[in-house]
Amino acid sequence: MITGPLKSKIDKLWEEFWTGGITNPLTVIEQITFLMYARMLDMNEQADEKRSARTNKPFSRRFNDQQQHLRWQNLRHLGAEELYKLVKDELFPFFASSSADSVAEGNEGSLFSEFMKDAQLMIQKQSLLVKAVEMVNDLPLDNTDTKGDLYEYLLSKLTTAGINGQFRTPRHIIRAMVEMMDPTLESRICDPSTGTGGFLSISYEYLLEKYSSPEGIERESIFITEDEGKNSDAGKPLLDVYGKQVENVLYSGDLITPEARKHIDTDMFHGFDFDATMLRVAAMNLVMHGIKQPDIHYQDTLSQRFSENFPNEAKGGMQIILANPPFKGSLDEEDVCPELLRKVKTKKTELLFVALIERMLQVGGRSATIVPDGVLFGSSKAHQQLRKLLVDNNQLEAVISLPSGVFKPYAGVSTAILIFTKGGSTDHVWFYDVQADGFSLDDKRTPIKENDLPNLVAEFKARDKAIATSDKNDKTQKAFWVSKDDITSNKYDLSINRYKEVVYEEESYDPPKEILGKLVSLENEILDDLKALEKML
Image (tube, rainbow, N blue to C red):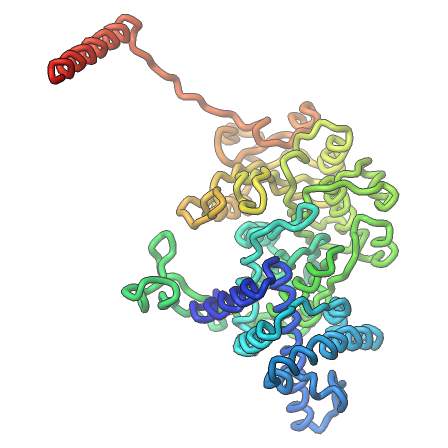
């Protein structure tokens, strides 16, 4: 969590872009990302210079003698015209050239640098660039504990859906999915449709929390600032919907060993996307959270080229996959990996991605994936083929129904979370009906007290398959079990409404004569009132 003053800085920066004519939220974030990247390059260069001076050991310089003027510490003091010309004509071309060199030489951070090669300055006004540089310079990018929250706050301003059904997955939904997957320090985690990198960054946050000792946890009470409320409220404790004071909790991850730290930085987190802008944002998101070299790539994971370029990742290479693939669109079959089409003959991306995830998992690997409800009950041959694959050839663990408003204001589509383990077969499937997620289900999505997610996670972890064949399996409750036989007899339908039993309360009515007498009495009262009114005229 970030404090009010820092939020205010971000809000002001956002407003400057808006008034400067850049109104696409993703473009704003991308341009801020470029400036953050420029500053962080110089920060890392300064850190290496100090270390080199102290140890007398050389390092690989990011800026040669002829490029010193491109360093953040030097360019941020320039006047508007000179600054604009330098950034446009020299700094952005420097991103492209340095990224190519970095990739070729295999330098640390090369995978992040790769996404900077197509960077373009979209800021047209010199005055806007000056203000943006000033504000980015004031952001606490040297504070490891704050950087991740800062970038998440930036991402929270994405309020418009992208193309092909892309949109930002609510972070509390991601958190619940991560908790159910419960990654460890040995896990290899992947998102084949990375987007802004939310699943990967929150997985890292979960690991920091999981592997922090009591001594490695810092708690800071949050108070209302002048910008957040009335002057009379300033300085008072900030309370949540339950009336509890909000805290900023920092997890150090002090129980993470150096070996595990290396795995986290280089081989734990894997992401792919075919949107270069999304990848740039995702890369910065992960770097800001503290992951030194996230393994993310520009790649259409549904294509044959994915298997050719990343054979280890494309088939049986992942232990955990967390994803919210695009819901919309269809593809040209010629571009789709033939092995996926053998699993499910379709052009629909929402079906192909689930088949892809099943293929990417190693035997025993697990996935939590968000799918539109149509995947659960669609009657086409492809829909049934996919569900049969999950039930017959894998262990389908759970189907979690989400309220239709969880993705507002992006979309109102009804969705569910599919959780399965690769390999084996299914005997019973656990269903859970989430009716509230802690936010109103309208476009405003304001916090409310009703929230099933903590109970969902707790019940998922404590679920007992022995209940499935006992009298305790109550299908009128939020959580219940369904046998494979029931599922197969219903054409592998996985929609919760197919199996949930609804208890109807018996309504009692007065006898007809009593109802008629009441109507006559009411009519007489109306007539009396009308006569009284008539006398008043």
